[in-house]
Amino acid sequence: MNATHRTSAYACLALSMSLVGSYVALSKPLAAIFPVLLLAWLRFGIGAVAMLRWLRRPADEAPLSRRTRGLLFLESLFGNFLFTICMVTGVSMTSAVTAGVTMAAIPAAVALMSWLFLRERVAPRTWLAIALAVAGIGLYALSRSGEAAVADRADSQAWLGQLLLVGAVLCESFYAVIGKRLTASLGPKRITSIVNLWGFALSTPFGLYLAWHFDFTTVAWSTWGLLLFYALAACVWTVWLWMTGLRSVPASQAGIFTVLLPISAALVGMCVLGERISAMQTLAFAIALLGVLIATWPGRGRRDEAPTQVPL
Image 1 (tube, rainbow, N blue to C red):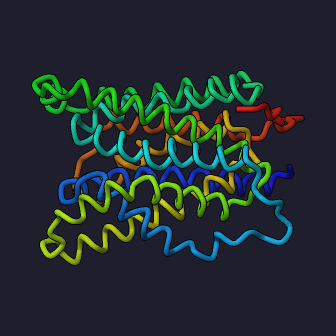
Image 2: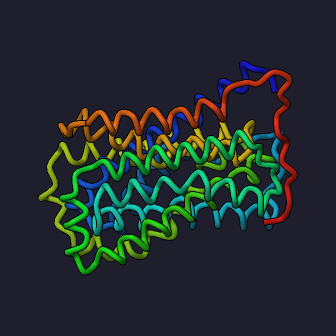
């Protein structure tokens, strides 16, 4: 893979995770209006309409095998359906501090699963980048004021929210590893559309029931606009960008870019919601981004790591 191709893949991965962080931050006001499963159903429905043309199989692509169909279902189950439920519910039951600390474990979890399931060789520089990513986001979370942490301890449901956030980390890790396997045989657009369609099917029974009991006339037009951005970002743009970048980058290295998820979420809070950022939090961001730089900086004589695909 040449330098231009590699840089393009890195850009796709970085933009994907930045958008994920943005819509995670913006999902909190939506979750305050819509029940979580209704929100998921509306999101997948909008995505399905937006990607109807992507469902058609290209002429040069082989028909889906039973194994590929199973992987597509698992990709949607973990990366779309369960991740959405665990993340949105977990954040609503805990705090941004708790979510930030928990999400810092995603790069390490992705690297570990890539080593276990894809038999990828994880280079020392990648492990160093993972350590910096975890340290940076952990420092950011711990530097936040203690008010949210106190509120978490006072909330009897905080422990359940923490477990849900851990579940979101595991779902995101499976999403990265299974996605790497799928990109070997399918194009990014087709993966994105089929995975979203499965998400819509999984959420439809819950969505229909909740929609029947929900008063849509109380929803403001601005909320519908936010929902449209959330759905397109979550179902279309982020998944397509992630799968495009993942085709050319080992899953363990791509996992480093998940550090941009909590960073972008914090930046959205600062720029859109008016939150302030301290000098210590700025340092934490710099440490985390240094990890991304170390993982992606082209070394002299460096050869791309070509993962050996094994059954999942």
